[in-house]
Length: 183
Image 1 (cartoon, rainbow, N blue to C red):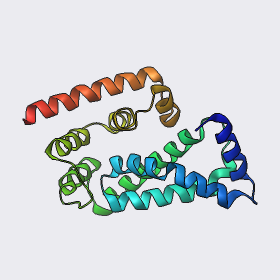
Image 2 (spheres, rainbow, N blue to C red; image 1 turned 30 degrees about the horizontal axis):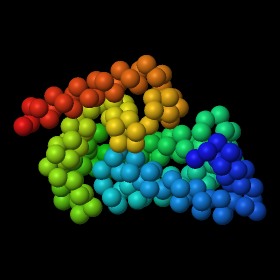
Image 3 (cartoon, helix red, strand yellow; image 1 turned 90 degrees about the vertical axis):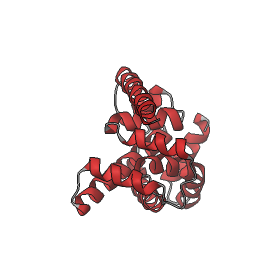
Image 4 (tube, one colour; image 1 turned 90 degrees about the horizontal axis):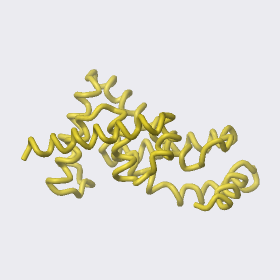
């Protein structure tokens, strides 16, 4: 989205008379990208839909507090990421299991998910990603699947670009090793 378009959208989001229409534009522009970003974190379609809905509710309620210090989509990604991580934490607590055990359970359930359209390689990739520490997982997903630049990921995760590059490199090496060892 061009900077001028983003500024106009943001202005309209903050104006009570144009907020509903502007929010509809925002929703249509970002819902698919955010859905897939969330889906790669929570792995389940229904959970991703719930988290996406919570994300947009939070965006709607918080838009007046957005100061424009980052790009709008960076702010949206940050909210979506935090909502997805909070969802997983809550889910693991409800189930009385560790975050690691929850990840393993989610990957095992992936094949049974009627919305998962991947082949065996995609499944192995998801298995490998699930073994990564949280930060590496997030960085890998945003760089590999969302094709975000390190500067954009830095704004979303509030982390240095150098640290992100190291995390991505380590993630790639771990994924390669996992896949190689499982073949």
